[in-house]
Length: 430
Image 1 (spheres, one colour):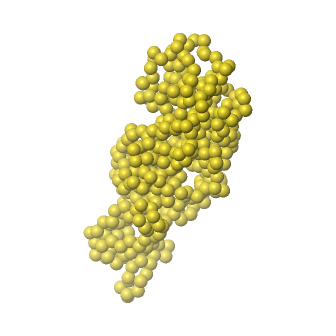
Image 2 (tube, rainbow, N blue to C red):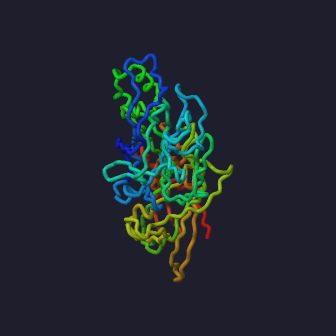
Image 3 (tube, rainbow, N blue to C red):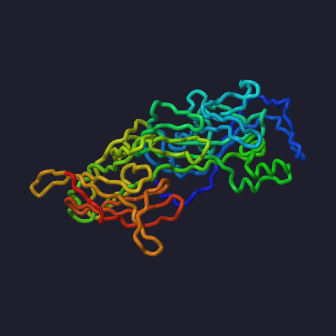
């Protein structure tokens, strides 16, 4: 795994083929202010791209893994939805409970409310990242095209990734204005939400000589995304965002006494049950929220992966870590992916051989705060943020003496070194 320093502009293209045969509505009316506008006669496949989310997890809950890992490229799944939205051409009812139905099978006059979905599961069309950078359907028989009857109708696009997080009921819940999943995370899933937008570069490439009516309505986003924009390769570009913060752990042996200490368990108490809104009529609704009014904090343990790196016969187990004087164990375990929060409690369970020759153990609780300084040099506390990475180093000195230091790294900005708040509460529980 590598530290991520800056956002890449890499785009992944997904080309869908095999659409229904083309047909044009006999009642289609060319806009009166058009100078060259003409309806599209051939089917227009949905083409999509995505900004690089840096790293995603494999489909077995194996933590955050570098995208260079071939296993991730072969197994990371993004589910895609697309739903009708209002614009000048359509101001009628929209219902996200409608699933995908080919346009040729819809009753006359009824628009395609759902443009992209998995008709069988209703969980969104599953896609994979191929070796050549293309996102392709898991179901290679899937084919989705923009509307041939209502070519000015506008559609929104959504994508999400939850790795192997457990879904309550095994299905998405579809309501009139949103789609959500009730999920349970265990600290190893990289939960990602994405909504598609046009990029500045796409706007720059719009041909102003194409048609003044089209040009104006593309720039004001009234036709984004539609048959007319798809025909001109103005495609949805997903802005992928991590919904969780990433914690990485290191061990540093500081003196000879550290040889006698064994770190048996590291865990954080966090909310594991979440409502994940993956598509909505208002993008502000997207992301994680509490399914109930109050938190229910549960233990999330640092685990390691047992088995082959390629994902064959793997499992997650807790390890016992030992570090000698002057030794550093970097990035132990799989790290943890946890929801944003003001602060966390970190628990460390250790065992050691006491001078009387007996093995003893203890659990210590540390208040985990993100402490830094502002421009004026004042100490300030900031919440742990989604999309940011935090390195926690445990300095082992001897019996019941562990100190912590922490380094914060924003995935979208330069690293910011900060001290861990060693003046905070440390409680020995056993």
